[in-house]
Amino acid sequence: MTISRRDVLLGAAATAALMPLAARAQTSEVVIGLTYPMSGANAQIGVDAQRAYETAADIINKNYDFDLPLAKGEGLPGLGGAKIRLVYADHQGDPQKGRAEAERLITQEKVCAIIGTYQSAVAVTVSQTCERYQIPFISADNSSPSLHRRGLKYYFRPSPHDEMFSAAMFDFLDALKKKGNKVETLALFHEDTIFGTDSANTQLKLAADRGYKVVADIKYRNNSPSLSAEVQQLKAANADVLMPSSYTTDGILLVKTMAELGYKPKAILAQAAGFSEKALYDAVGDKLEGVITRGSFSLDLAAKRPMVGKINDMFKEKSGKDLNDNTSREFMALIVMADAINRAKSTDGEKIRDALAATDTPGEQTIMPWKRVKFDDMGQNNDADPVLLQYVGGKFVTVSPAQAAVAEAIWPMK
Image (cartoon, rainbow, N blue to C red; front, side, top):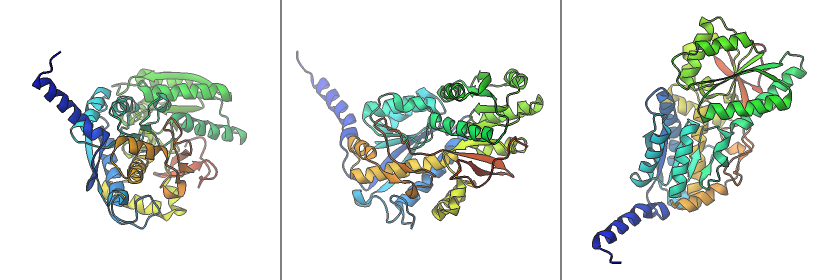
């Protein structure tokens, strides 16, 4: 077989496209890709994420007296003081758009790592693309339990997943029962992507294991224009606890529809997502006094760890709001990734991957109420302890677990 000059050139071009993925020269800047919904129904999530990552990048690139990896001193000492540069990509909440944007970040923007993605359904395709190119991916704020169980070598998640979150929720319900509260029946309400489906499956299993009766298990279409039929079903079931797994716009529609149809649940215990977002409480917070949501982050921690309050102030200056369950996880994801790149002393994907796998950061050197950041062989941090937060008087207070709580839960809701 003869090889033409064109074949040689095409082969060289293909090799050149892949070369930066395998071995990139040390540089004065380290480029990290971030992919989020920057337009569409969840655009505000992307904007807030951007502010969280900017806050973390400021701390890494400048000199701060915080007990956080890379806070002291400027840039990455392992790479001669190289600074972090962030490149954003808008996946619009679409898994296929997420795949294309991840590929663009890797092949055109020459990023050495990617962080994302808010929606778990998008994390599926983005992480697969990163795996193909041997680029480390940190799942900052995706909670679907199945994500880390796909045998991916370059996938890492510092924060809890929904089995961990849901276990904390059921621990809380068990504690309430022991105190004499009536908690027997549950209504599950969940959107139809991987986030809602995995959440409901986990909660169904835990309910069966722990002796709770699920009297409604309602799946609805993500970004549905109406939830009237579904809310009528919830009202008819009249469970002791409503457990929604919904993104922000769906959560707002749910609460508005409940008010219109006169459905007042005794208690709401939410799987965060929209129920941790300021936009939801700005829209319908007057109807949610006493709602409880699971979370990764507790601003109450600032009383014990003043650094948390100072970093929250930095974020608030950029965004006009406090850190929440999503933005705190995003902030930590960049700190974790940058720390690994620094220890790898390289922008080579495999070396960063190995450094991530060796991560062991004490909880005190994070802004989270976690024991530590240490990944198992599937890339999951099992030491990220969830908290439960109750919305009282226009702010969240930590009500569980006991070691993190600053107040007793108000039960049932007002």
